[in-house]
Image 1 (cartoon, rainbow, N blue to C red):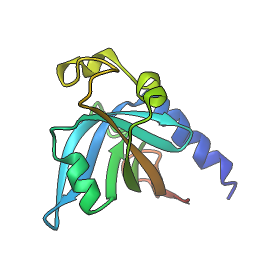
Image 2: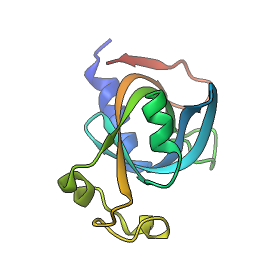
Image 3: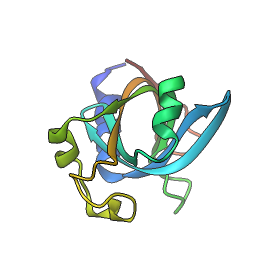
Amino acid sequence: MNMSEPKEKVLQMFKEHKIGTLATIRQNKPFSRFMLFFHDGLTLYTATNKDTHKAEDIENNPSVHVLLGFNGDAWKNDYAEIEGSASVEESAELKEKFWNGELKEWISGPDDPNYLLLKITLKSIRYYQKAGSEPEIIEL
């Protein structure tokens, strides 16, 4: 299988779908929430407020799981199940690059001292063309 083709499909999906779920581990249990995702190639970023527990969860266990793509309109959408490792990214340049007005309910602006980016380094992607299809597995 040509590995660039599944990666291209995933990158296209990342462009089209910004809202997904992020699961972290808290006290040995999965904890999921909806997040707004950004990407730079096959690296995902999501914004959070320092006062939430996500950064703490990641400090204790960097393993995360992301669901991205499916939007609930029909079972025909492509989507991905993503395993990764998260870290806190405090680069002012990246925080400015990924700032989005939709974040204003949680963070006042790109200079807000409580604004953190979570960088998710992908380990594997199970990409599905649609529900019920065989996944294309990309190991990174």
